[in-house]
Image (tube, rainbow, N blue to C red; front, side, top):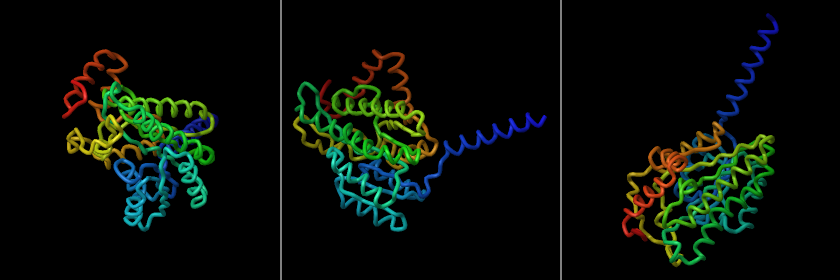
Length: 292
């Protein structure tokens, strides 16, 4: 009988430990967010700040980071002008974070840009820029933050897109970079399987932000206007809440929205040719679509 009760207590203790790991509070945790000046990155900063986290924020537009810092004066926030396509900028962001806080608990690789042009017509410099910002920005920040994340058994997060599961026509460089990020982070997860590192790949569907307004066109210039109705999309704030919960629960994957997210991924696995046609037809309906 005693052996039975000891076994029960052991199982209860194990359950509580697992529950704690999967529902970690973020209060006082040090969270690094790239691309924090707008959109999902800015919303993530606000969500983590509201939960008592300490923040290290990187973005190219330092004036927008300063505005965000002034909104949360009771939150300890470090800001640094960061172009994630520059390896040295990423290294400095991580080094300054360690100098300020002494640790890193969460790294969210959020910085990214999009495009809208046919591959047949696009200047190859656009593809390189997409890869430099989206993929290599994630690689650089992860490389310098990884030793500290391993010490805290922390969370490594990549914000990709449904375009990281299905190729979006007119967005070859964007989809390629998001597929690459997913493969990179999945591999980092496996390499550190026994070291307690949590890796989350978060894939929002179409989310209201300025990413489409600054998307690159054939020659690398910004398109200026979004081709989609932003009011019908998930808000950046709602997206951020989902991502923060996924970090707290230490999920490995987060696919947001049903039709444009979960259903799309499911169709890609079971009926890939059908999904190709549906994707083509859906994207061709955009105003001024580069293909018909």
